[in-house]
Image (cartoon, rainbow, N blue to C red):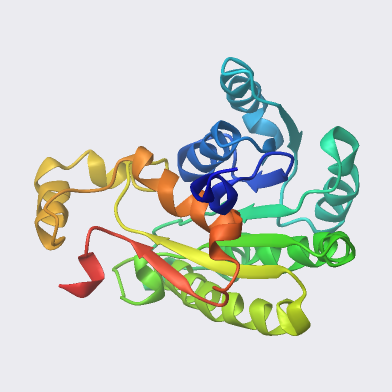
Length: 260
């Protein structure tokens, strides 16, 4: 096998991707399937139609895919979903925590319930889902956990206090997960991707304002906002043996936005 194939080979691995019905989650799930992994898409029950479409997209390229519905903020439902996941292709050894929510509320309109929902989905669920899946990864001596951070892990944006707090937490959670589970040559790594501005459900309100989205593109060094295909390289890298000596890191996929 050529070196490039050894480094980036994920054939035979199983990826579970939350938020897998749309946006960044769906794009990452598809590229992992393109690279040879079997993929389980997870999203809310209300997203079942989109989940079926995502599975068909993978099957159309002769990939293997399945889906599960789950509100990841419901800890009982999360545990049941994690228990059912191995029934498709075996125990997931790649986990992508891409489910997310940003209610974009002004600070004086944030309620306790809206705060909790954003923190539960963006920060709490990634830890507890990973904790359900890690024992099988430990037993097999290999696992890749990929969290989705944000520009708001580093910068403050208006009308996003709970979201920003949760995404700042994701960066530290990624370090803490690595400290807990990458020890003693366990074969498990945990890293995060910090996307810049990509057109997704979470950012659609911005893309409706051309002057705003053009200004954000100018804020990058490269000079454009992200396309979903830009996720492929870093996602496959972090899911493959090529990243075996990288853990606890957040890689910004932002065209240089945070560097400018």
